Amino acid sequence: APTPPPTSGALGLEVTADVLNVRTGVMATIIGQVTRGQRFVSTASQSGWYRIDFGGRDGWVSGQFVRRVPFTAQEVTAD
Image (cartoon, rainbow, N blue to C red; front, side, top):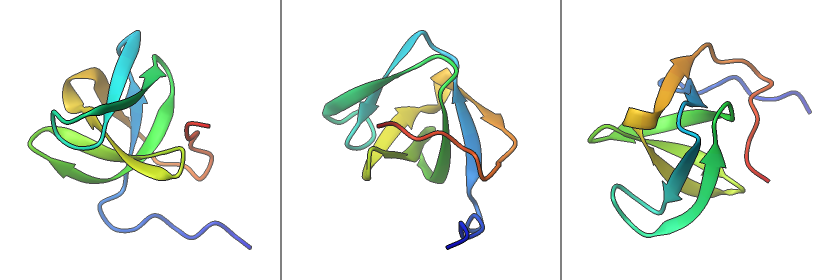
């Protein structure tokens, strides 16, 4: 099946920190890490944090350590 188009408000993010913690919410429990250059699609933001798909679950990353990039259908998600 074709990949559905991004929902309104979806944006591409690229990690700019060497290692960035992924959390269950804004300043919440760490559930994993992503590394510089990894790209994700964010569908929501709150208080300067962005929600990403992190291995099939919701993860949150700080907006201080990511940059917006053009959204494409080939975004990489964490394994």
